[in-house]
Length: 228
Image (cartoon, rainbow, N blue to C red; front, side, top):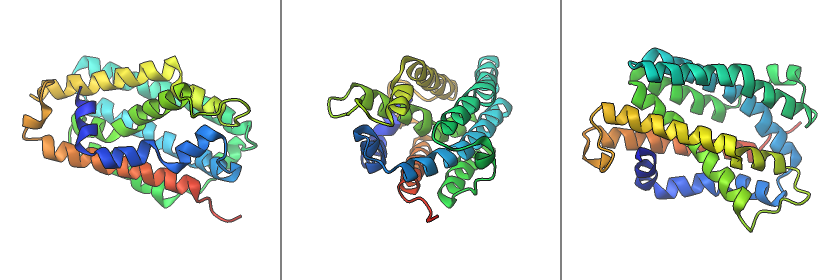
């Protein structure tokens, strides 16, 4: 699986992302609520740009299956996931109006524009590699937290978040994303057995590593909400 090879190309950066203090505090239920609310508001903005990135994937697709898969993701995000996020934010005292007037944090801007830029400059594979740390990273984090003995679910205010990303529906979606990444790579001559032999390997690794580092910066942003 290309995703696993990309992870192995930057183990320290990946570990810093998936075991970030923000994540560990979620697992223990000790994350300050102000930090989580700030994260939720920025994540709303991220989801809008994430939808745009998948819309760009429709444009970049040169195969009918990829067209359908990318179009499905746009529909899912805009007509389902964002609505669920708005409802979840409301349970944390954040209205949809609050979300719509939230000022975008620089870390959010850097990450989302990077993904869109890779998509505009490159092909579908470049875009999917830049997107991979989000869906597949959250799936790995969610599964580990939901199944881990060190996680404190009882009375944890973030239990719903953990159960969402560790749950079957999100896990299945992440596997589909990994499968599409493999299929697109194979059509571009990148071996499933040894992707490192491809002439594109160095650029794909650099792309992936940068996206992982920007995900880590997103967690850093969450831990440091602006003063009220």
